[in-house]
Image (cartoon, rainbow, N blue to C red; front, top):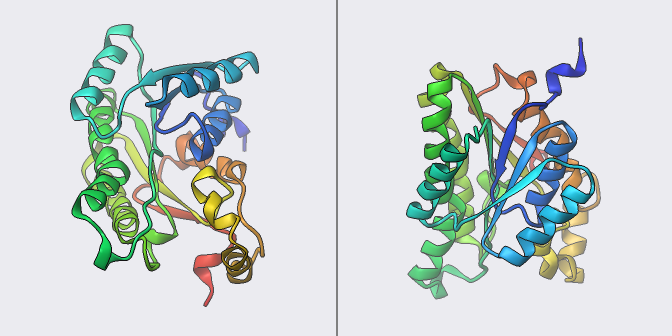
Length: 255
């Protein structure tokens, strides 16, 4: 079998929330596999810096500044892609936020903000990408879920609900768009060493719990998600649809 099956040469990938963290790792991984990657975020300075660093490293990279919760901005971004002749072959819905508070103290506005950023954005951007992919008869969508796509943890209710929704949104996308040559799948990362988890990694008690609870006995690194992402974005996964792959060091498999 040729490894060309995993090549992303000639493909263009839009990755939301990709100036740092998991999104940046996905961007660098897909670029290394041959794709042109479009970074996304709302911080123009950080996005420009990430774009420059990747370009200086010889990667094919561009950027698109828009808020993933702003429907008009999403449509305008895809209109710009169309006008420029940019074909989005791959979409990774990675943008997300966390908010920790017990439900009895949780304001509806904070609940909605997490749902909008982590779930509704994936629907809106996925819809715009799929409109173009359906016409072409091919496309890959990868939604980023979480261990909380399956399991709940206290104080992160909106995040848990959003990531559970990501799992089912992925299946809904497969159900509706599979016949048109699209594959929609998801990745469920375990506890990863990212900026978003900095408060947890610096908490000795929580750090010890993660390491004891995970069969790998350690936190995951963002680069350890790259292989799964390349697989789901490449022709190697053309008959895989509606699935979520947990890259979690084995945590979800054990009691």
